[in-house]
Each structure stands twice: as C-alpha cells, then as structure tokens.
Image (cartoon, rainbow, N blue to C red; front, top):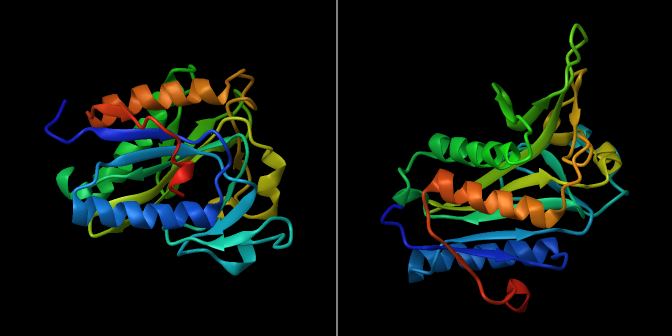
Amino acid sequence: MTDFSAVEWAVSDMPVDYEAALAFMERRVRAIRDENAPELVWLLEHPPLYTAGTSARPDDLKDPARFPVFEASRGGQYTYHGPGQRVAYVMLDVSMRGKDVRDFVARLEAWVIAALDAFNVKGEIRCGRVGVWVDRTAPGGKLREDKIAAIGLRLKRWVSFHGISLNVEPDLSHFDGITPCGISDEGLGVTSLVDLGLPVAMTDADVALKKAFSEIFLSELVNVPAPLRDQV
C-alpha cells in the first residue's frame, strides 16, 4: 500500500438522480481539497438519461425526446446512463497521485481492464478512442469492436470527479438515441457483459471493480457504513 489515506468505497442500492449526484460530487471535491475529507469511489446506477460532455456535437443527439438530457462538466461527448450500467464516480486527489492526467486516465482504463479479466473478458484500449473495447471480429471477418466501458473525467484543483461506466446488463437499444462518444464508424458498437453471454450480476461486477481498484491504485479501501442517499 502507499502512504495515501484510505479511500472510501460506497455503493448506492437505489437509482440516483443525476443532478443530485453532480451536486454531491461538487461538494465532496471541495471537501477533499479544502477540508481534508477522505477520497471516495461511489458506485451507483442512474435512471435512463443522456449526458453531453464538453465536446458533445449537437448532431450526435439523435433522439432528444427519448430520455432526459443533461449537460455534464466532464470531458467527452454524448453518453448514456441507465439501469444495468455500473457507474463509478471517482473523487481522488490526483496531485498526490503523480499530478499526471494522462497517467491517471491510463490507470482508470487499467482498472476496468483488470476488472473485466475476472470474467475472462479481454478489455483493450484503442488510440483515438477513449474507453475500453472488446474485439469481436470473427476470424477472417470484418472488423467488429464494441465499447464496454466509457470514461469521462473532470479535475477541479487536481481533485477528480465523474469517472467510468461499465455496461453490465443495460438495455443496449437505449444507446440508439445518441452517437455514443461520437463513434459512428462501421464495425464499432456497444456491448455489455451479459451481451457477451456472461451471467454477471451487478454485485459480481462490484466485487471485481473493488479488487481491481485496490490493485491498480494501490489504495486501502474502506466501506462507507451507510448508503450515501441521505447525503445526496
């Protein structure tokens, strides 16, 4: 383990309103920077919605009436959140973790890849395409690569928030209302653990994410004893 203070680990068992989650993260980021509050990884699900990152293009919102659309302060383009997708918001002090944004994003990617490895899924990164991908190209067939996890991040005074979203068992048709992360090339799509034929429950994904986080970020994890919903 490192000399970092223990990172709190919280899991919300009910869907969390997106705007309430943003407000909570803003408060926690300030507290980490100004009040020495513990770092936090917060796992949750949202009701079905689309979010627009700072690089979102209007044409990528193909069905604006389908679900609520929120402006997000994170980097990136449009993405979907909804039931069956594990969102992990990471509120970490990057200034104490090398003060290297590229390295931090690489660690987030490595975290997801290590968690997927627990299910014998080979997650991969691609130059120019943020997130984690699964190669589903058949031998001798045309390229097919599906995105299984998205990454969107913001730093405020070197404290991170937003984070990752891992597709466990979402309704993949919900992605049809957007061009996910601006990716529209032939042969590229989205997938989930269940879509890959794996009977993975959300609790299974959480166990894998927790173990992988401890290994990749070399941090001691402390469970938050009560759900965060009373604070949100």
